[in-house]
Image (tube, rainbow, N blue to C red; front, top):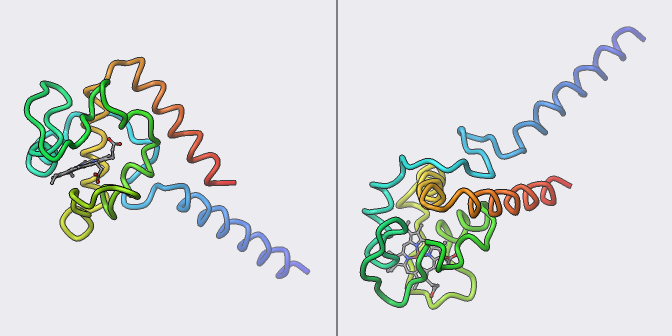
Amino acid sequence: MKIRCFSLLFVLVATSILTACGGGDVDGIVYPIAPDAGGELLYAANCQVCHASPATGGERQFDAPRHDADGHTWHHADRPLAEWVLDGVPGGSGVMPAFRGRLTEAEVVSIIAYIKSTWSAELQAWQTEGSQAWEDQRAE
Ligand code: HEC
Protein backbone atom coordinates (compact mmCIF):
# COMPACT_ATOMS: atom_id res chain seq x y z
CA MET A 1 0.00 0.00 0.00
CA LYS A 2 2.80 2.32 0.93
CA ILE A 3 4.52 1.69 -2.40
CA ARG A 4 1.33 2.26 -4.33
CA CYS A 5 0.67 5.58 -2.62
CA PHE A 6 4.19 6.61 -3.35
CA SER A 7 3.94 5.77 -7.04
CA LEU A 8 0.61 7.56 -7.30
CA LEU A 9 2.24 10.61 -5.77
CA PHE A 10 5.09 10.28 -8.26
CA VAL A 11 2.66 10.17 -11.18
CA LEU A 12 0.87 13.24 -9.85
CA VAL A 13 4.09 15.20 -9.47
CA ALA A 14 5.32 14.12 -12.91
CA THR A 15 1.99 15.10 -14.47
CA SER A 16 2.01 18.53 -12.89
CA ILE A 17 5.56 19.11 -14.09
CA LEU A 18 4.56 18.09 -17.62
CA THR A 19 1.49 20.31 -17.45
CA ALA A 20 3.66 23.22 -16.33
CA CYS A 21 5.94 22.66 -19.33
CA GLY A 22 2.95 22.45 -21.66
CA GLY A 23 1.99 25.96 -20.60
CA GLY A 24 4.31 27.43 -23.18
CA ASP A 25 7.38 27.98 -21.05
CA VAL A 26 9.61 25.91 -23.34
CA ASP A 27 13.10 27.31 -24.05
CA GLY A 28 12.15 30.41 -22.06
CA ILE A 29 9.31 31.20 -24.49
CA VAL A 30 6.24 32.51 -22.70
CA TYR A 31 2.88 33.45 -24.20
CA PRO A 32 1.48 36.09 -23.95
CA ILE A 33 4.67 37.81 -25.06
CA ALA A 34 5.89 40.66 -22.85
CA PRO A 35 6.66 43.87 -24.80
CA ASP A 36 10.44 44.31 -25.12
CA ALA A 37 12.43 46.50 -27.49
CA GLY A 38 15.32 43.99 -27.73
CA GLY A 39 14.16 42.47 -31.05
CA GLU A 40 14.45 45.75 -32.97
CA LEU A 41 17.54 44.74 -34.98
CA LEU A 42 16.02 41.38 -35.93
CA TYR A 43 12.90 43.22 -37.06
CA ALA A 44 14.95 45.68 -39.09
CA ALA A 45 16.87 42.86 -40.78
CA ASN A 46 13.93 40.57 -41.59
CA CYS A 47 10.63 42.46 -41.66
CA GLN A 48 11.07 46.18 -42.13
CA VAL A 49 11.74 46.06 -45.89
CA CYS A 50 8.09 45.06 -46.45
CA HIS A 51 6.25 46.20 -43.31
CA ALA A 52 8.07 49.51 -42.62
CA SER A 53 8.89 50.44 -39.02
CA PRO A 54 6.15 50.18 -36.38
CA ALA A 55 7.87 53.06 -34.56
CA THR A 56 8.85 55.51 -37.29
CA GLY A 57 6.86 54.37 -40.36
CA GLY A 58 8.49 54.62 -43.80
CA GLU A 59 8.05 52.89 -47.15
CA ARG A 60 6.37 49.50 -47.44
CA GLN A 61 6.48 46.85 -50.17
CA PHE A 62 3.89 44.39 -51.54
CA ASP A 63 1.16 46.18 -49.62
CA ALA A 64 2.36 44.49 -46.42
CA PRO A 65 0.24 45.70 -43.49
CA ARG A 66 1.78 48.08 -40.99
CA HIS A 67 2.33 46.69 -37.49
CA ASP A 68 1.46 49.98 -35.80
CA ALA A 69 -1.92 51.17 -34.50
CA ASP A 70 -3.13 51.70 -38.11
CA GLY A 71 -2.52 48.03 -38.96
CA HIS A 72 -4.29 44.98 -37.60
CA THR A 73 -1.48 43.02 -35.97
CA TRP A 74 -2.83 44.10 -32.60
CA HIS A 75 -6.19 42.47 -33.43
CA HIS A 76 -4.50 39.07 -33.18
CA ALA A 77 -3.22 36.96 -30.28
CA ASP A 78 0.51 36.41 -29.83
CA ARG A 79 0.64 32.67 -30.47
CA PRO A 80 -1.07 32.76 -33.89
CA LEU A 81 1.07 35.78 -34.84
CA ALA A 82 4.23 33.77 -34.08
CA GLU A 83 2.87 30.75 -35.96
CA TRP A 84 2.08 32.86 -39.04
CA VAL A 85 5.57 34.31 -39.10
CA LEU A 86 7.09 30.84 -38.75
CA ASP A 87 4.81 28.95 -41.14
CA GLY A 88 3.06 31.52 -43.34
CA VAL A 89 -0.07 33.65 -43.10
CA PRO A 90 -3.22 31.56 -43.74
CA GLY A 91 -5.01 32.82 -46.83
CA GLY A 92 -2.15 35.22 -47.54
CA SER A 93 -0.76 36.12 -50.95
CA GLY A 94 2.33 33.99 -50.42
CA VAL A 95 4.52 37.09 -50.74
CA MET A 96 5.69 36.83 -47.15
CA PRO A 97 8.15 33.97 -46.68
CA ALA A 98 7.70 31.40 -43.89
CA PHE A 99 10.58 32.06 -41.52
CA ARG A 100 10.90 28.60 -39.95
CA GLY A 101 14.47 27.46 -40.51
CA ARG A 102 15.64 31.07 -40.91
CA LEU A 103 14.53 32.33 -37.51
CA THR A 104 13.99 30.33 -34.30
CA GLU A 105 10.70 30.58 -32.42
CA ALA A 106 12.58 32.53 -29.73
CA GLU A 107 13.76 35.05 -32.34
CA VAL A 108 10.25 35.40 -33.75
CA VAL A 109 8.94 35.94 -30.22
CA SER A 110 11.53 38.67 -29.63
CA ILE A 111 10.46 40.36 -32.91
CA ILE A 112 6.81 40.31 -31.83
CA ALA A 113 7.88 41.60 -28.40
CA TYR A 114 9.56 44.51 -30.21
CA ILE A 115 6.47 45.25 -32.33
CA LYS A 116 4.38 45.23 -29.14
CA SER A 117 6.83 47.56 -27.38
CA THR A 118 6.05 50.27 -29.96
CA TRP A 119 2.31 50.24 -29.14
CA SER A 120 0.55 52.53 -26.67
CA ALA A 121 -0.03 51.14 -23.17
CA GLU A 122 -3.72 50.90 -23.99
CA LEU A 123 -3.15 48.84 -27.13
CA GLN A 124 -0.65 46.62 -25.30
CA ALA A 125 -3.10 45.93 -22.50
CA TRP A 126 -5.96 45.16 -24.90
CA GLN A 127 -3.90 42.82 -27.08
CA THR A 128 -2.26 41.08 -24.13
CA GLU A 129 -5.67 40.39 -22.62
CA GLY A 130 -6.77 38.80 -25.90
CA SER A 131 -3.54 36.78 -26.07
CA GLN A 132 -4.12 35.52 -22.51
CA ALA A 133 -7.70 34.52 -23.40
CA TRP A 134 -6.26 32.59 -26.34
CA GLU A 135 -3.85 30.75 -24.01
CA ASP A 136 -6.61 30.00 -21.49
CA GLN A 137 -8.78 28.52 -24.20
CA ARG A 138 -5.88 26.49 -25.52
CA ALA A 139 -5.18 25.04 -22.06
CA GLU A 140 -8.77 23.81 -21.62
C1 HEC B 1 8.63 40.06 -48.69
C2 HEC B 1 7.83 40.94 -47.85
C3 HEC B 1 7.59 40.57 -46.42
C4 HEC B 1 8.53 40.29 -45.44
C5 HEC B 1 10.04 40.24 -45.57
C6 HEC B 1 7.76 40.06 -44.22
N1 HEC B 1 6.43 40.18 -44.44
FE1 HEC B 1 4.94 39.95 -43.10
N2 HEC B 1 3.55 40.16 -44.55
C7 HEC B 1 3.82 40.52 -45.88
C8 HEC B 1 2.56 40.63 -46.61
C9 HEC B 1 2.40 41.01 -48.07
C10 HEC B 1 1.54 40.31 -45.68
C11 HEC B 1 0.02 40.28 -45.92
C12 HEC B 1 -0.47 38.86 -46.01
C13 HEC B 1 -0.04 38.23 -47.28
O1 HEC B 1 -0.35 38.79 -48.35
O2 HEC B 1 0.62 37.16 -47.22
C14 HEC B 1 2.20 40.03 -44.42
C15 HEC B 1 1.54 39.69 -43.25
C16 HEC B 1 2.12 39.61 -42.00
C17 HEC B 1 1.40 39.38 -40.77
C18 HEC B 1 -0.10 39.15 -40.65
C19 HEC B 1 -0.80 40.48 -40.74
C20 HEC B 1 -0.76 41.20 -39.42
O3 HEC B 1 -0.24 42.31 -39.34
O4 HEC B 1 -1.27 40.64 -38.46
C21 HEC B 1 2.31 39.41 -39.76
C22 HEC B 1 2.06 39.23 -38.28
C23 HEC B 1 3.61 39.61 -40.38
N3 HEC B 1 3.45 39.73 -41.73
C24 HEC B 1 4.78 39.72 -39.67
C25 HEC B 1 6.04 39.74 -40.28
C26 HEC B 1 7.28 39.65 -39.55
C27 HEC B 1 7.39 39.60 -38.04
C28 HEC B 1 8.28 39.63 -40.47
C29 HEC B 1 9.76 39.50 -40.23
C30 HEC B 1 10.20 38.33 -39.48
C31 HEC B 1 7.66 39.74 -41.79
N4 HEC B 1 6.31 39.79 -41.62
C32 HEC B 1 8.35 39.77 -42.99
C33 HEC B 1 5.06 40.72 -46.42
C34 HEC B 1 6.27 40.49 -45.78
